[in-house]
Image 1 (cartoon, rainbow, N blue to C red):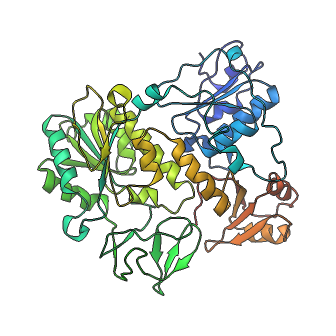
Image 2: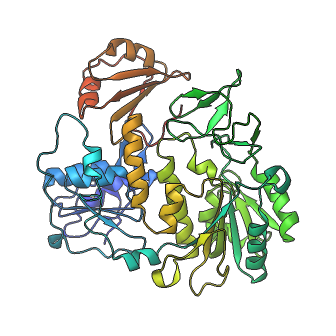
Image 3: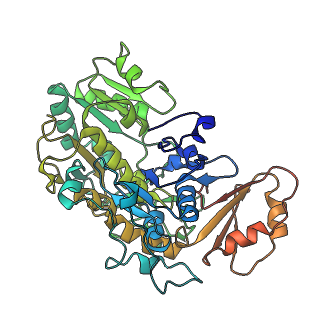
Length: 475
């Protein structure tokens, strides 16, 4: 194996080049196979212009070189599943470490016969009877054992104005784990997340009728969806009440509340508060003896050997105004599973409303989610260790909203964006939507059409940022 500077990679010979997303461009004299580990990871997406995704580069390099391409992920992206059906890369799914077969054993697959060429074939490709099942998938027993036991705490019937962010069941689990001398990680993603509203009468979350994202209340009192811009009156769809409450709470306030309830010192961490590596963070004098940590999702990476990872308000992930919200929510549960260890014996594990032993690492730790959407596909997928449940639900949602891989999109921004859009005109097969932040969203449901149109537009003078199929939309 080799992980050498760029100038040595060209002379790597028969060795393997290992690296981050930049390794996708490694100038190897002979390319025998390409492997992408954690193909779902957003870090494979380069945000600097020109934007690119290492997974897509790897697939294209393998196609041109006519060599095998293996995508590995415990929770495959829709893009990977569709690519498997149309372009030939193999997809190995599993939450355990995956042993790689020799390159000659990775047979290149053929694209499905009769696939339509004039439109995206997402629905056909994701039928459970066709290529939805990854060809390199691990056995179900082995795959289940890699996912942690999951406890789902349903908060729909609670008065959060009285109980606050922490349910009594979660507090008991935190105390029990801390008393046993093991570490607890509490995750609360506040910055840049959905502003959640819930009915004061029945506790039901206010959601978009079209795409199920969280909604916010504008100055006129209407409920507005940040994902698809649909509006509706501020009325609970379950009970008809017009009384809604804001559920937002920050990390600092949550730390103070948790410290009082857990009767233990609590260390707060956010992405900006402590940039040091995990070993330095855990080794500091103030934190060395700490057993309870709270922060944004970065805390999952920074605290090692946790026995319990709790998501205090998982609805912020499930209903976030991002078109990949369900996939990203499931990946958070996967990251937490890697932290606490898999379930013992590979059984179903976990359950709704608690139960099971917390702490003690013989059979792995436990992941807990507090939610008002216990029936959401991402939670069900983690409970059943079946990530493809999210893929099935996402396929129809992406087709409805026109997001990748059911369509191609592009975001045009910066000072020269307006002139670029003027020169673009009104091309056939391309939708143009103006945003409030000076950006434009372009969309085409015809494969390759958007790329062809963009390549024909003369670039204007000035700063211009063009992102094709970005991982996230800032709308």
